[in-house]
Image (cartoon, rainbow, N blue to C red; front, side, top):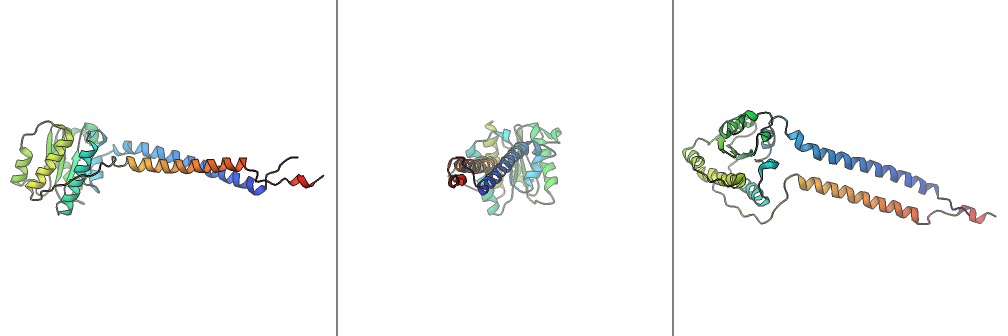
Length: 229
């Protein structure tokens, strides 16, 4: 006797196969978009694009630890809540400057460049941190106390510690000292969203595949010929 599969089951399997195909294609497209994002950000001047909406430009090659990044972001957030808006750009290499690589190792000149780029949407000082020094431009950057704080000799302690120290000194000299305590260590910005999305999509596909396999093994079809001689 031959067991026939009900037409509705065959249709469901075809629809499921198409849905799985669409899901796989979507996952591939999302992965490709995530991989292309850093390359796209390298065009033009990436720091000015980021600082237009965020207080910190932190390239992947800056070498900050998760604790340093969390403390820096918390400090800038606390300063904003206290009424002092500050933009910070960490430049670890010439590639972080995009199309203005001629300003590499010129933190003061690049700070003035960023201040001009952001002048239409942001009113506040802009701090630039490079391996060879600091630069500050914008409102309040020429205050004697602020200028003296930036001119102090600094030990070579990496970009992370240099940035944290410079931000604290600028805030203190401007009359907005901030002290923060970081209780957790977040993942680097952007990576957590991509990983979570891929895990979600992958988990959904695995569930769908398991369901499809169960449909093929369960005797859901009726034996139409069983009643026939």
